[in-house]
Image (spheres, one colour):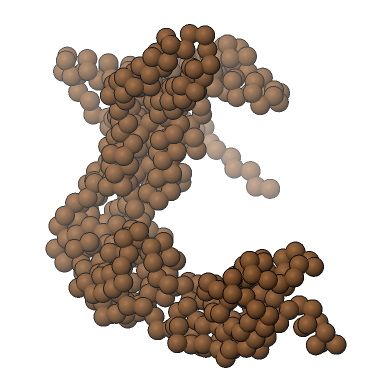
Length: 568
């Protein structure tokens, strides 16, 4: 091992160089003293912080060994409330200091606390192209490499697609969309502007960044929530139509009135009670409805107009405002939900939902061509069924630009979208409306752009594929064993042959014409009453209800006893 020997002269020169680097008037001892003072101050701060933590733990009776879920939830809610209060204290103190600095002209060179950081150059965030070059473009990108506005919380993210969002106060949201939605969801109003002159923008998803609630920098989308879609949301206010406080109260009052009206005549004071119940069921309930009207219908319409719908299209150089819904229960405790409902201002000072970043994921698309319609054929789901109101059918259409999910059928009751399509043909199952008439006209429209429609044409009925039934045997069996066959006797007719269809194959010749209620193709049966002119061996034949010209040969009926004897 080599030992380096340093001469006294070199040691003196080295010490002189060290002292020359210290601030003027400072010595090594003073520097050490400052360092020791800083260390002592840090230690004191840590002691104060630990003491404050211990105080909160003591006040909330928190025990790390607690296993009872109810007690543990109560303790954690208490600690969470203390944390929220301290965060609010920091916000208020910071606001006070910033205000006083402005009043007295104190310069503020530091960036405000909580300012969102921009992505570093070349990181790929801010491109929208997925190349990672950092070139100008949309702020952010989606996993599928489509253009999007998933940025670092900037607000005006790029020159073509701009996103603005505003958190709705829960009670205002309740007025707009109903009590249950306002009470259970965090709702944002999001305005998306498409400044592109050449392409429409198709929205794939809208996501709220919840990273700050979990201690991460905003804009990272490590914790995020997509909006609930309209079709899944509608069930909540629909149930509220029965169970919301106003509606439930009315239903209870109506039930009380109905019961009181039923028993009023059974009481000794029926004369007084009868008139009182009449007043209750009449003017009182009418005044209740007038004082507290039900807005569920208009709220559902507003929800349908505003809620997020997948594959929403924004036209060129147009903007669209939508409401996005994030369930409170997935990110907030029950206590936090109650606090947000009662005092959103206090809540937002510790949980800054109003500063959440919104990511709109989508793609620029070309103009959608309108659908055309050349034929529309209705086929009953049950073979042989006559087309009429409420009958289940399959509608098959032919034309051009037919897209499953986007091409909608208008004119046959409720508007429905094609469930299958290949561009030139498509189909959908539906129930014929109550006002159905043969040849009822329909037209097609695009769900993405309702102005794109086809011409209206009348519907036609699918040509019957029913073949004529054949009849090889017709056996009569009395419903009551041992009863002699005669006029007016209830019997079961069992037939054998081919092409026998329940509901379509009809029995002709035994009084009133009836259709087989059971059939398997080769056999069938129907219960009937023998006619007044019944005679043994009375002949029958079969006919199709869909096409009465399709009939079988006529053969005589036999009894169950004679059929059994013949088989022997």
